[in-house]
Image 1 (cartoon, rainbow, N blue to C red):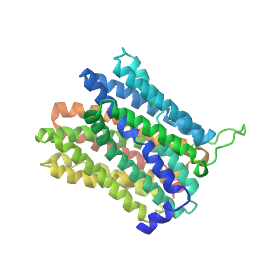
Image 2 (cartoon, rainbow, N blue to C red):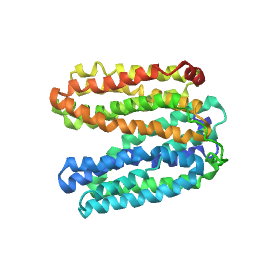
Image 3 (cartoon, rainbow, N blue to C red):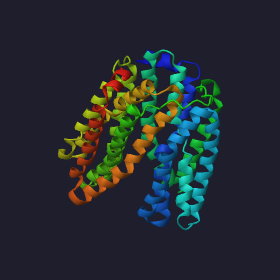
Image 4 (cartoon, helix red, strand yellow):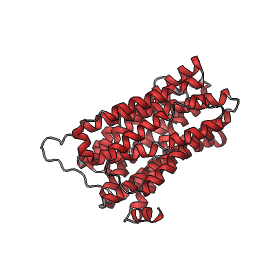
Length: 394
């Protein structure tokens, strides 16, 4: 396993651009929560905090694919310099609007500016891997590295922003997130040697992005987003009903640890000859593993159940990236990768809202029906991808 990872990370510039992208991705798990914590601390209103955070998340989701398209056309460096600067401005204005209690909709607009400029470095760094790794047998390992880094971001980010906001200064969490995104983006922009070449404009019609494959994958991504967003709410409610609200963070960390460990293992395995099959099975098993969770008696058992469910997340996401890399034209790869991230982001908010409604009316145990149904819906879509696409993905 060590040899496999060393062979990939020893490629010129690979370890550096991957590590740099880790820092620039921290706002994915810090900024939204940081806005909620800051607004609720200043106003005492979680409703207002949620609306401001939603403006940030929805703006990032809506404009993410456009940023990916610009990166393909203009080159990553130009886009990274611009979005890094705009993100810093957006976060600064958001902090100022909250601190000075500007009237609506100014705080929401400021948060939306930051959301629009959220650096899509997760997609960009995966595009760099396809350019840096010529041996296809190593590309699975490269994508696994990024899946593991995503899990690290989502484990460390919420803990860090909560500590900074509540223990250091209420604005420090957002300041750190803004600095990490801006400086990380600019550091990645400086690494021109590992960036994929930009696509020259020829006046010819644009190559189709391949919605026959990408469309279903985005739909599955929305289902996974609902699954992720609902699970966080349900775990908080489950541990609170048990009288152990402080256990929610630990249970969610175990869930992420299952995905992280699975990502490490998948990265050491040979590249699958049929990523579509692995993707279908991973999504289906992930959904089915939620079926027994509502019947578990304690947080300890819930953590164990979520560990196994989490072990299906990385295989599903790694296979999805493999499918996109195989089925989408190289000239539109970054844009395509961004679309799946957008799908997940779109699913998180309604997933959390629906789960909250079910929990309020029927209890935490019933809430697990939401991720189960969302996951099964995603599995159905995955299994309906056409035979033509299936053969191309092989």
